Image (cartoon, rainbow, N blue to C red):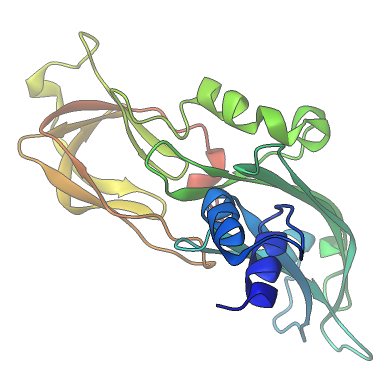
Length: 259
């Protein structure tokens, strides 16, 4: 790799380096910053179809390249005459934490629906991208409340820890789907009369006993995530036992679920 290529990679990762540095020093600096999050923001053109287009249907698409920890963000717009709906990303801002292990993607989308006027309007969005305990990069769709929209990216991990998201000790976590050990709060065995696969895009590899917010696993099972928007979480194995569903993402059961 040439010095020019090394300098570019370091710059893309948010690091600082100079042409006067030797190649060995540049390589050392690149190794130091390669764990940093970096991002690329682009604008994509779209021609809406269907009659029920709303602003949240055109929130940015986020793709994380896990090996390089590079985040690809695509905002949506329409150009020219549109028969169904017109889309405008009114504003979008990406703010990275000082240690470059977390970032916010925040903004607002406006849709003018030419078929169903009641679907027209603007809606804000907030995504928190962060490096979890395992080293995997997670994307969490947060509510567009004042706290999330005005919060510092330096506080993302602390804020998510309060929700149990991104934690590994004593819990099973897959994106924003969380399972906590029952630890004395479990329902009696005889209460588990029905089976369920999981919630939303997070499902076990087979039917699992379920009752009132708790899963009862008689053997270890794999929890799989089905991506619908490019945000893919790795499979996790859930040990046998009783687990309380601790997710804080209400959108898991929403018709327009996106996690």
